[in-house]
Amino acid sequence: MSESGIGGESGVANAATGISDMTGVDDAASIRKSRSTDSAIALAHGSTKTAGEATNHSLGRPVLSFVRRSGRLDDRLQRAWDVYHDRYLLDINQAPGSLSMRSGLSVNAGFVRAHWGNAHPLIVEIGTGQGENVVAAAQTSPALNFLAIEVYDPGLAHTMLLAGKRDVSNLRIAQVNAPELFEAMADGLVSEVWTFFPDPWPKMRHHKRRIVQADLAAQIHRTLRSKGVWRIATDIEDYALHVHEVMDGRADFENVGGLTVSLPVEHVGKGNADEAVSLMHADFAESPRFDGRILTNFEKKGIKAGRAIHDFTYRAI
Image (cartoon, rainbow, N blue to C red; front, side):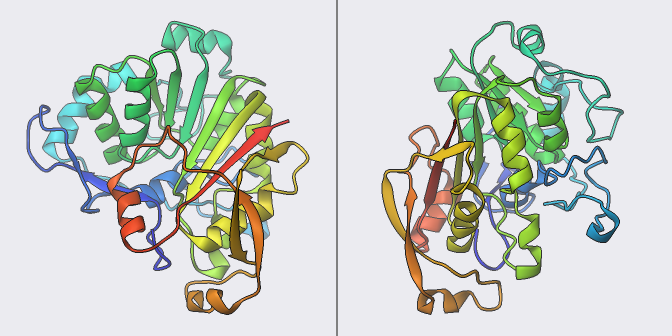
């Protein structure tokens, strides 16, 4: 969440045992949505490689926006997994332990009807972390379907725990490499895509790992229905500039933000972030805070630390 390199919403499952204790806490000990948002994305370069593979751009391999790590489940999360995974976790992986999509699988309207039991509009959250936001959204919007993409076991288990305790029926979870999932999606299937507080990758040499990239934007646009939206949020000023650079000039998306925000027009990295204030600034269009995003402990920390929250709404045209 800061220029130190820990970005994105973070938290851990409550250490108490027993599924009845489901409260998330803001002590980021085992799950970091900073990386869980990016954990759900290998920047889309048409790759079908397993998400944990090492990258080497010179050899034509995709630049990954996360490093795959194993996540140990405590007893409480293991019980949640055992109880709820059949209900919420989609069986779409190539093989056990793989983050690749099953070959030949098409995620289309028939797939939605088969797994959600209806044809309601579909919202996809990339990198769901602990699941606080997507579970709250699903609970309050029963006329919508929600798909949470996440790769780390602790985050998945905590999402299942929250959803199961609240008996949420309109949520499904995919533990796959997100670009492959979007590649398998039918055109116009999705109403909205959410990417909230992605890992900022603050070092200049790592900026290419940031989620918001032109290739991913093209895939998301294809899967969005007409006038569907991609909602993005960050509390990192340099990431906000990055979003504008990638998205504002696209012919297939419209920035529908109604606020004017001043940002530096040059990038900074982890070592020179303090120089941003002295750089030339320009005005950019951004959006008011999205009402459909709950105020998590992570976002509260950013606000308390004096960081501005940047919201973006890009409409498919």
